[in-house]
Figure 1: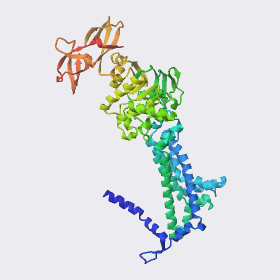
Figure 2: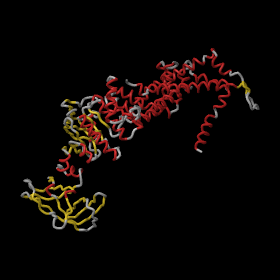
Figure 3: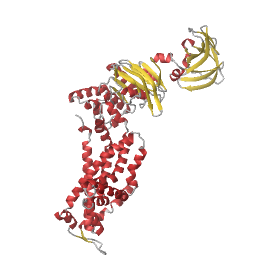
Figure 4: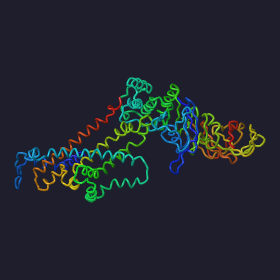
Length: 261
Length: 339
């Protein structure tokens, strides 16, 4: 019974993907046609055509989101560790402040930041977009990593130090491999959040920094079903691919047998 | 191997003071135990010696060289935690040689040493297993081998047997004793189990309230405790209040000549096993049974002897009833005077 329900839930979740998979190959599907008229996959033709520049934009978006993910992790790792293991004044306030972007609507946050970015010359360029993309992902990354740190505790790192490892060695050989599931979860989350941003990229990038979701938005808005579903499939596939590759690379890299002798 | 001195160590956390001037001297190759109730500061003392906690004041000397300022990873004392703390992502073999790999020891030497240690802990055939695949006792042995790999000057054991089954404890005790004897290493063990402390150690330090109350051989600690606190911790005891005048101890239970020049009010400590139930005529006191509890190999009795409450235990298989009058012989010779 339990098995049946879990299968049902998976089926319901995957249901919207069925028309999405069909639409790129449909020429027309009007009422009262029950079976659509399949065409020549013009969506994919458009995607791969040199004029659309879609592949370049996709690659650029992937690169941008990878950079965002790396920077987010670089901030979130020490922050989560500090919150997990150190006691300091204002710890609870900092915990709340880190979560704020999730609580306060992104529009409100980014409008204010936009004004500051114009003053600082960060509007309408890539650096500004990367910086603004850090904001929605950071709270999730810190939360996930905080739990990972709490799960492994501080004692095992202390034991490593007691056996002669310095802080960097402890981080590299003990802490990071142990919190790896959390790191993978956090980076997947941050990557997807960054990759899906439309509004804040548009606002801060001023239309000059074009990401893949910005390319998709007008297609969806115009009701271009064939193109919209084609691009959506590419969108999903690219995320899946990046996440799988990242998972393999990270796990492979932090395999203990790669370390020291 | 090292001779270790901890000199008046104080430690405070915010408002709570954990150590109030702990001084202890451990000789080269000695096995000592720190014992006391939870929160008495024994683990803190151990961690200060390990260099994992810095004392607010005081010094740690290894072979008379100050080690108080050394960073955590330069300590020459390795701690084996009660939670074992093996690295879960490393195999047994790589756990053991972690410290050697960190020190960039040559491959051949690492291999040779790891094999030797695996043999010592009799886990050679498990070397490629992960800690999660081992039993509690095996994990403990790996943790000890991992500590021994880097040849520390002192091995610190933080309640090493507390998480083990009773049947395993005996084996582990034997194993650690062997390690101590074969490697002539200095060992400091924290425990709250008095039998364990007595069985294992050359000397025992009883701690209370962040201070060492008595630091002596197991025999002296048991037979000649320097305070009621120490006496109570290490066994059932009776405190008989009385006075000494002209080398005669007088209490409600009677008089007894003692070899003591000092005079005045005094409490005599009599251990429960120093009171024997005897036949009529052989007694030096009598008592009325006020409580009787059967506990298998022995029974616990509480007696009222002329207004003095005495707790005794007997291995004789006799069932006593409340209000029975029994004859007892108190072995005053073994009594300890606590002024």
